[in-house]
Length: 250
Image (cartoon, rainbow, N blue to C red; front, side, top):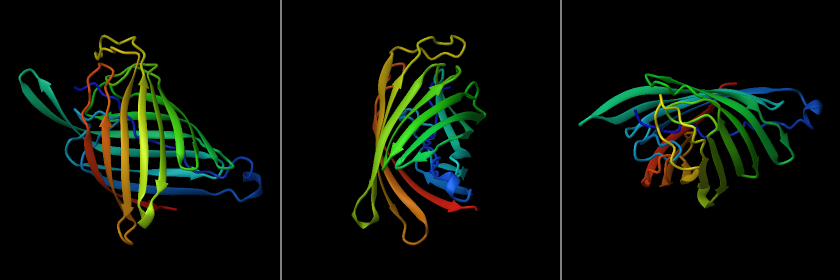
């Protein structure tokens, strides 16, 4: 089994800010999303991706004007790993359950939340992360603190991300996302995966996206500049093509 770090890139839901809630009717919304990705690369681990084959992903989000949010997101998995002289293929499914509070004050949105990862047919990976984040006018910064040990990380590992998205002419959008890790080196010997450094650059993602006519779907192309994992293995660069569709449930 590969030693990886797993997490969907989750931002806080947009809310009406605590300063204005009292003056407006309280409302809630449920939305959904579904997408097909040419491969599933998570947190810059390109050498042994979550799925080197096309992956189906999707989920649902509940958001409340008070700032409370909750949701679910899932993805198909396709692992290839070495067992002696042979390469073994294994499939599974990732399930992410999350909730939190993301009030907006002016143009600034704050986010505090919790993510529970649950995997089908993947051992010792059902871990929990605490999330703190802030976003402003297309830019964001976020930290995700791992609360327990597993195959893909140690309690105390922190995944740091920052990024910025902006509009281009002809309805194109360009986004930059950077990922960095600080590691707890108190490895769990039963789970394996030695930590050989205190911190390290993980990835830089450059994404160009564009709506597909009037269908409501969006196509995207992401170039991933790979960094290195906690065991100092350099990750290669790769590209991911995607088609996604967002929709309102209520």
